[in-house]
Length: 287
Image 1 (tube, rainbow, N blue to C red):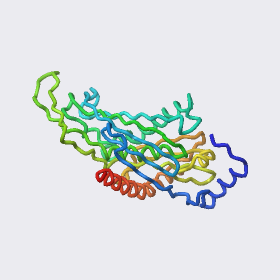
Image 2 (image 1 turned 60 degrees about the vertical axis):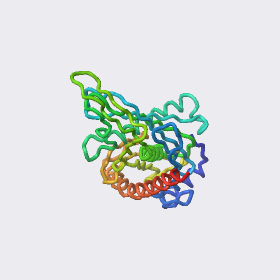
Image 3 (image 1 turned 45 degrees about the vertical axis):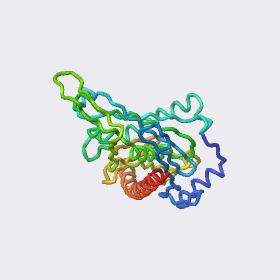
Image 4 (image 1 turned 180 degrees about the vertical axis):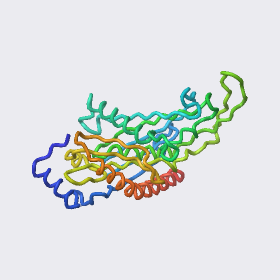
């Protein structure tokens, strides 16, 4: 927890009320965003994202598995987050474990929570090789390297960039079989399918401080929040998931306004992130 004096707290809250935050940003302005891809060579895809002094890494590992009996036409995705103790003293021991679990659950809700076709964040049906028998399982790991607020949005951005960087080997079914026998699958070492990230959303967290809410809150600003709502929005403007933290309740009309603001902000964030990912991929190909 960030320890602030009364004067510092009043300075932060007063600045937000006047739409001029401590670092000179407006309420709905993000810090500079930097993206690197291919940072973990042994992974199927990986990326590092920096938002101000917050730095996170996401990696994707694709492995062949068997679809669940409930969803034979879909692959599976699991998301795990680890908060490095070197990123923040409070991450040592139980504090880090609790935050890791909280972030993992929030990412699952925001990125995998879509039920309808339009709002589905990650297209799990694209991971099926043979319906009911073979699918790709994606294991997504997030690591918090440096923490200065807004971890969920940064991790969501890193996962989107890592998935964009992910190449899934082409799987050719060698023979058709009957009954419960597993088909033989030939995995290509040379042909890779790029993961379609066009519908993968960004996460926009609106942090309420006093009567106003801000995006991309720093750790100091988060220490003054009454509540925060994280909304995942894709390029089509569909809401893919929503999660709230903080003890203070919010009126439904405020949440509806937050969703409207998140949709507006997400357009700029997606464009910025896509531009940074494209530049990072170009740099990776040149090196």
